[in-house]
Image 1 (cartoon, rainbow, N blue to C red):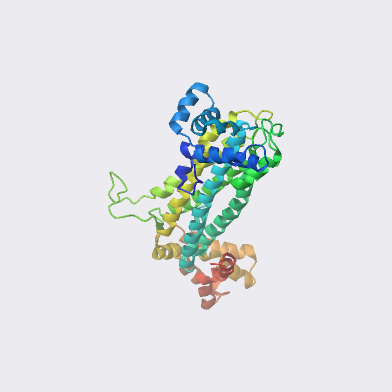
Image 2 (spheres, rainbow, N blue to C red):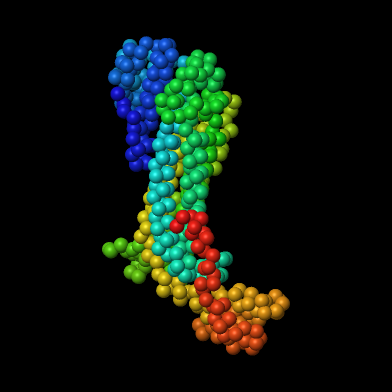
Length: 431
């Protein structure tokens, strides 16, 4: 008897052997349901459960002749079971087995993905707490904007991943469905009660209204949700790549002893894991498009979706799982350089504090256009010059000093003024 499968690592969930195990699991659940309703002998079901097995190689041998994967599987199972095998697959169509078993695979894969998503959540949470007060410059358009903290950047990542966690909970309900409803979904040769009992035994819900297949909007939703997770991981990876650039170097991927970055340049320490994650995200996103194409099948079913799903489901699940493991390790071991963050924050004499000066001048009665011109002139004079010093230019500008005291100017250049409300964000996230 094939025992229920526990959660192995992702690759095992998409092997041929595991797939056939889920097929057998569905067939046995249907036999059990039919026996409970008195349609087949209970003793025959016990015999089926005791003897049922399969040989993946033998299944392939039979399939090469009959050109039908489910018939080949059933033929091989009956070689083990004998006469009681005549009660297997009664009133079913192939898609009853295929789609219900696929639901089991997708649920098991999603549970593993959710498990690793939770690990990522905890790692980001800890890192955000650690760097709650690590001041750095925020950037927009790739240009220095205003002060923030590295912990706050990570808090944004945490909020995003928590949204994914909620989406995946809903997705599990959406995808955990089966169908045992026959050739066009009308239960012509099997009762809805069999479907209900069998699906309950499998931990699934019966589909509300199936055709020969479970409608593929559910499956498209599944792959799109994985693509969203991958897109967020890519966002984090791209951020790390940008912050690791030599002229920035505020964070860096952990570089192990003996690791080499370039065959030609011994100095190189490249963000290879982040780059790999960026590339993988492109693949997962491409599968979302293919899953959407699978929704529009002919009438009650064609098999144009089948060949696509043989690629996109294992690929998307394995890639997403791997990406979660990678980004979790990357964030956990990320090297953070607060000194470089402080250096970059204060380059060109702290031009990132320009808005505080602007608002202070407006508060003293200057109109916005006049105040903006004063501050912009000093900022642009300091901008991109080795000796540029925005702070010095502001403190020497009579149009500023006649309105702002030295203490008021100093307050404008205090990064803590930008951080005084961040505790509210941390409280929302429970950091």
